[in-house]
Image (tube, rainbow, N blue to C red):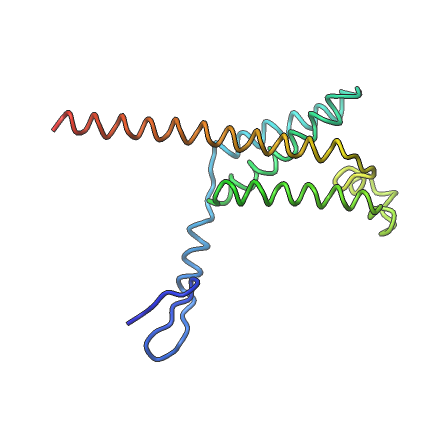
Length: 166
């Protein structure tokens, strides 16, 4: 008799088998072209905003809304992960990055001369950025909810059509 406990199988001799954990993880790995395409389009939009927009609204705030959507779509393009935990993880990452800006991590690590570090981590903390990240995640959750509803409605239509054909 084999019982599955936390993705590790324990047989009746007390030996551990990690096959289920490997199978579970590999089942999570995938490539979802829809999320990948959205991530790529948002990445291009972010680059265009960074290169050509220098205003007080689109670059700082719309860019921050889009960056959490970009990260979410990037993760979902490679992992079959639940929506809410993924969205909350992305929000946590965004908040952590903003906190690191608050404590001046770029200067602490003496990376202030690195353009990549300054762009990726950022150098200035703003409370409004946290609100922009929240708005981005709310958008993600709303879009996922709408997508789920459409998928469920289409599935119900298909199953009712199959019943009518029989």
